[in-house]
Image 1 (cartoon, rainbow over the protein chains, first blue to last red):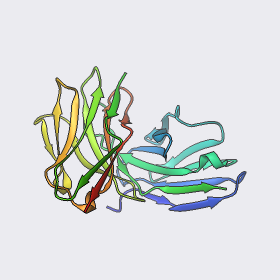
Image 2: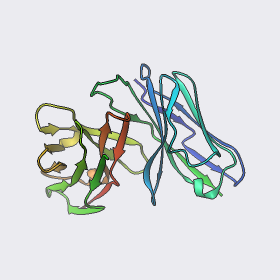
Image 3: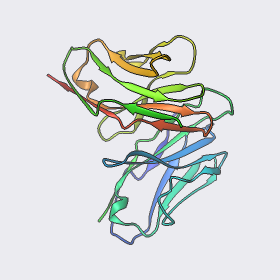
Image 4: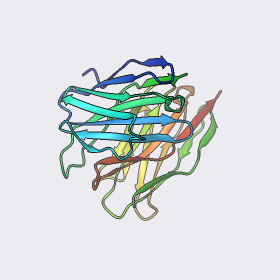
Length: 117
Length: 113
């Protein structure tokens, strides 16, 4: 299995521009998670989906952030407009979620390093 | 509320020495615990997990962890570290109530020659 695939690996953009980060989860996984990692705040869960439906978006910082999962094999995280404080590494993770199961192990992608100038 | 505390932000150690990275958790329900490792400029990789059964869990790269319910701890150990073990290590608790992983702040392991 190819694992969780994120693109791009690096993104440099100017303040005010729209940024779209992409994620392809592991085939057969039905849960997808978006995290943000910074030195100051560590790892933060932004949003997660079960069966393509957003379950908890309480971690999304503000309305400039939006996430979609149009099908089981693709998700996007969009920032519009971007700001310098959005600079971070964004990770996508997926798991095979079964209610009541202990085997909800998350597998992470390599991340997208975003720099907003 | 459930939480995870990693007691050391940085642990410097010499090559071939033993190491212990400490993790304590707080939970009122059944716990499922994980250690992840993050090498520089890479994503998080699962090192080991405790779901049930034996309290001593063995993972990849010679690491092991012991689940201690009375002390609410899940410390990570390795008897002899290598330079290549230099990385950030995260302890995490799976919350069956919310379906989320709750991460500690991370511990940077610095292995010196």
